[in-house]
Image (cartoon, rainbow, N blue to C red; front, side, top):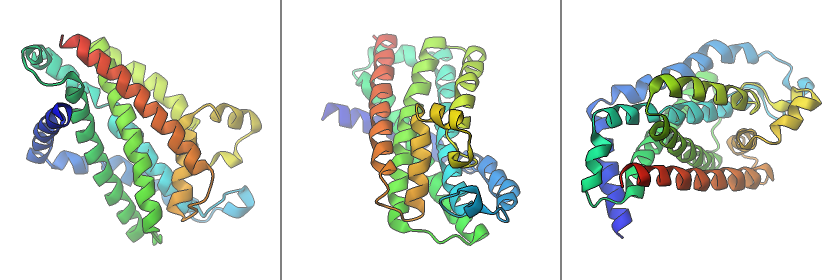
Length: 254
């Protein structure tokens, strides 16, 4: 009960900071909207079936765009924590009885809440702009995958921030890691059009499964086996990264 109460206290404080400047929640939608408006139309006239697409062009692109937003929207959350470390916020936490795990979970749940809101807005705008039919049951399940990705990468970002304590060190590290992960996840185009060696590499990328699952759910293909595969992989990754990052938090505030 203490963990839940402490997590709620941290989460409430962090959300209040977001709600004081809600414009930043919408600003984070600008980049995916650029992709939707300026890149999406390039796909609409593609012979998708002949190219091996399982679904239509926009039905393939939009779920990938949501996963991309989930990855980039939370993986860089740790930059804010570095500022808090520099200002002595984490140092002052040492004298409080707040659970160390709650310090992480409250922040990560703030990031996840913001992310889910942004994902819903992006999907609704995609429906208006591209005329997509939304499968609501599939969308709800897809948002659970988005939630798990957000929790995993937000926790990882905070753990890395505590380790490095420097934006100059953190930025190139995250960019070096995220680029191959992004390219091997088939976010922009499905990996069915990729050569065999690229598809083989992608099998070791859990986010490739997440992208395929998001596309299946978005299109109402609720029995596709990739869904439970993605759920298992992303769920395990989230648990692992939360555990690792919580230990970093505990050591930094003990």
